[in-house]
Image (cartoon, rainbow, N blue to C red; front, side, top):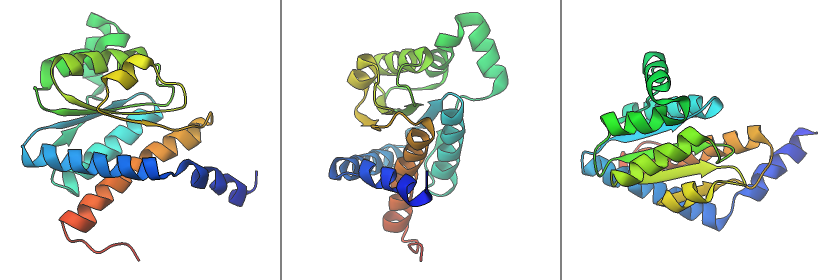
Length: 184
């Protein structure tokens, strides 16, 4: 596939609805920051890497308290004691508080540990943002305050769009709120 054809796929995925949801995410990040709440970001594999990047950017660039649960000792401890499908939910149970925000990223939208984390976050009255591919679990979508569904079956495109959406929200905070210079 030629690069211009590849980039056309991304252009087709950007819609007015997606732009509105990026604004909603930006507003929710700012709301949590002003309320001195924590933001947690979690996913598996490439989504875990995205989660770490986003948590770092929120903390450093936006001064929003954000973190992941991706410490290997924590994952293996909770995975061993509660099952891999429950390690993020147990992290939510141990670390998160009512009113905090969790961003759950799952390209399939079907990962059991992400679904269970959404249920644990809902039970704690946390706000939930989820980002998925085209066929998310009804449970994840129903539990989410903001849900972004990327209508592609190509995982790299789904993952890149997740990164674009979340970094766009961060850049909105930097440009508008922190009066940073927009990129040239």
